[in-house]
Structures are given as C-alpha cells and as structure tokens.
Image: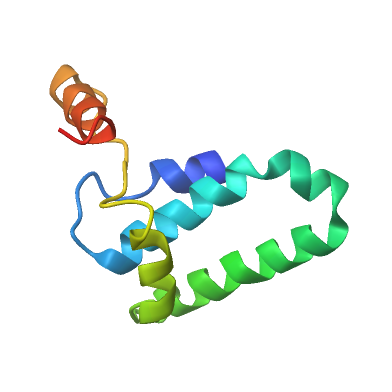
Length: 99
C-alpha cells in the first residue's frame, strides 16, 4: 500500500494515542522519501520501524508508551484528514492551526 493510501485509511476522528502516533510515523516516513533514496541503511531502518508499528497495531495492541511519547513531544494530536465535505475540510484546517 502506498503511504498516501495508508494515511487516507485512518479514521476521521480518534483519541487513540497509538493511532495518532502511527499516523505521525507515516507522515514522517513520507516526508523522508528523498533521504530514503540516498541512504539505504536509513531506508531499511525506517522500513523496519513502520513494519514493527503495523505488526503491533495488527495484533490489536497499543504502541509502547515511549513511541507514543516521542510523537506527543511534537504534536498535541494527529492532523488526520477528515471527510471531504466542507465541514471535514474546516475541521482539518482548524486542527492544523491548533484552534
């Protein structure tokens, strides 16, 4: 599955810290695409990390607290896209602005 498709598959709204951390991990993964092409070791480590997260979530377990906290340090909540209508757009936009 492409990262963009995975990001769009996230629930419209969630308070689940594991889901929010996984979302941020995928956003980070996508943002590092250029670096991943230049550094094979970094690519392998990042691929293993995403696979590890997906394995835990697939088992229905929460991500470890240290992983969740590492993302909470930078983001209060995940800016998960909401429905494609006007209300969903505004909700995503205001969440992006932290309003």
